[in-house]
Each structure stands twice: as structure tokens, then as C-alpha cells.
Length: 128
Image (cartoon, rainbow, N blue to C red; front, side):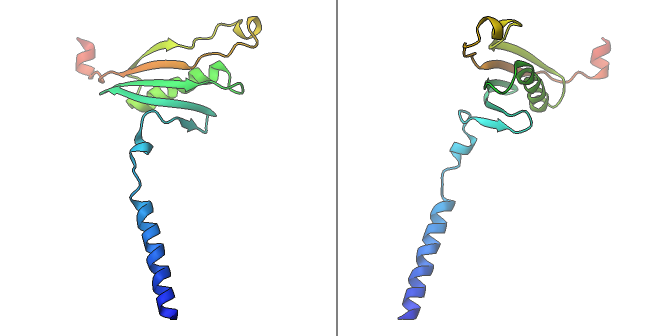
């Protein structure tokens, strides 16, 4: 009787463990999931539009100022492209200098930018 209960318990836990390993991992790699950068305390969404083309949407919160959002945008673009050979196009979310004073209760939109990674120039090509 004791061995049957051990066998049933072992079978139950093995089924539970095997069920957890078969979870769909597509959600983890889905581009619509927001990510968190702990260094800058920023939530963002990274979407791959095409090869070497990305869109970064930085979700603002009241605790992080615009200069930190912009710094994160530059650093993330640098990491995506592996260097300074990228083109940045700001789509929306630029804050004016007096925006916080003029509109203190305004909820600012997310900072959205498109990043295009350019190929690195060789020294020979740069001299031409």
C-alpha cells in the first residue's frame, strides 16, 4: 500500500514538472511585452521592424525625467547596433523646456523612436 502511494506521488509530480517544461516560449520573445531597465528605472517596448531596423517605445513615469529617457534611448541604440553607426528618428514624445510648468497635470506620451543600424565604414571607404 505504501509503495502505491509513493508511485502515485512520483507520477503526479513528474506530470506536473513535464507540463511546466512544455509552456509556450513565444510569449517571452514577443515584441509587445514591455521590458524593464533597472539601471535607468525605465519601462520600454522594443520592436524589430526589419533587419537592422528597430522601434523603441519608452514608457514615461513621473519619477524619471526626460533627460534620463533620452540617455536611455542613446545607450539602448548603441547596444542594439553595436556601436555609434546608427540613425535615430524620434517619432513622438519630445518634451519642451517649460512643458512641466505650463502643463503640470498633462500626461506626456511615450517617447517613441526608430533606430536604423548603419553598416560600419571601413577606413578605405571613409577616405574616398
